Amino acid sequence: MSTTEPAVGSGVRRTDHEDAYFEHARPELRVRVPATAARVLDVGCGAGGLGVALKAERPGLHVVGLEGFPDAAAEARGRLDEVLELDLDATPGLPHPEGWFDAMIFGDVLEHLRDPERLLRALLPHLASDGVLVCSIPNVKHWTVVHPLLVQDRWTYEDAGLLDRTHVHFFTLEEVGVLLDDLGLQAVDIGVNDLAPLPDALRPLVDAAVLLGAEREETAARLGAYQYLLTVRRVGA
Image 1 (tube, rainbow, N blue to C red):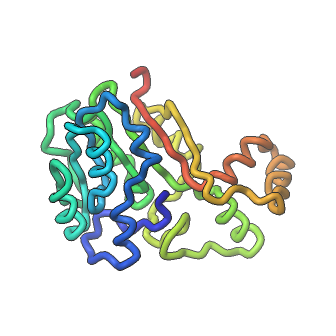
Image 2 (cartoon, helix red, strand yellow):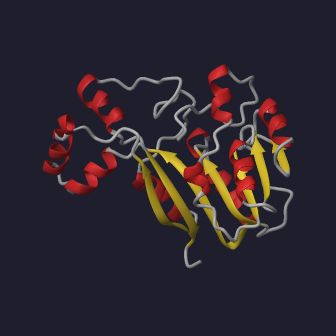
């Protein structure tokens, strides 16, 4: 799971702790790529760690990476089939035919963008009609964010994690659903990375939410979800 997320498309030199991030092979995302996929787009591919692991598992798979950091893109070029170095906040589309990709992977990418919907609209024409998006998105409703905010009046940016200082957008599961609805998409499978489950000592957070009208089990689950892992398709696909 990624807890260290450098800015996407900034083109600045990487720090030492970002080097590990760019090598993440992300098995929890690879398993969501359909076995029938022949062409995959890895958005924010870093140095190509995910793509090269995917290619090792599936000989013959064609992986294209998109990356904004020049040095990371250069590394990925020696490992993937194609790498495009571009600003994800500005790209109008891809030099590939419509419907060319069977899957697109967004591993901790959307939260770094000024306008995630704009990028998705630019890339979706290149996704096959029955293709999938595979996404990992941090959950700002996690108790490690809510508890300091509610009790200590703190919202402290860090070098890594849910309040990574390079995050531009913050998502809850509900807000992810709104974004997908606006794009004519739906999550057909939702998983959770429960890196830090809700401690028993903080169950009063759930009690307070229930008193205000929330559903108990759903609230507890979402407070304990560090990151959502989604498989997404077009509505009706």
